[in-house]
Length: 261
Image 1: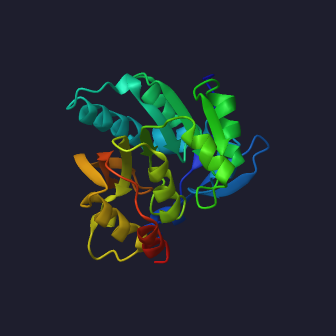
Image 2: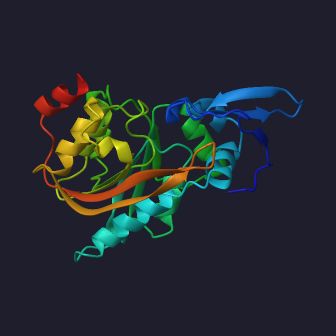
């Protein structure tokens, strides 16, 4: 990856504590000194500016999630007689390739990226060319038969989803569909905001994750609370990183149950 230019960015001067995590925003100045307001989840606009995503989330707010999820998944696999280098990974919500980059450092057999927005694929091809064996733009809530066959043709045995679950970026149905694409006895590595494991959270996604963790469809190998990144105010945001082995596909009735909530 070539070193991109540094952007002039500005975090809100007033307290943003009343905003939810997916409503947080910042400002970036263009080359002609225009001040643009961007929400943290305006991924299409952020990816269009080379290096901006890394600068705001990794340099400024100290996000460590791709490295953390890769580490715990490797630790889980080390408990078995399998090899990390034999993984054929589906990186769901791959963005501009930071999770794929963390995996590539350990070595994997195949790395397939997918995101719902074309700007993510364009950014990856621009910033990290040749990182993925293939990168698709797909909506996992509405996969065609041909798309399902395409993903299954890779014989994928690992799913990773980082910093994209529970905020509407990747809906419950999309996560389950991706889970079901992975071979049985494959591996799953993802992270979620710590409150999603709270029984007080009655959202469909939160209930699905809690049920899945303790279900027959998945065996937990590693659960770790860690600092995902800093908030705008500099306060730590804690997430759980999860590494697990898939036992079986999640049935359609559970998909419908949680997708409707």
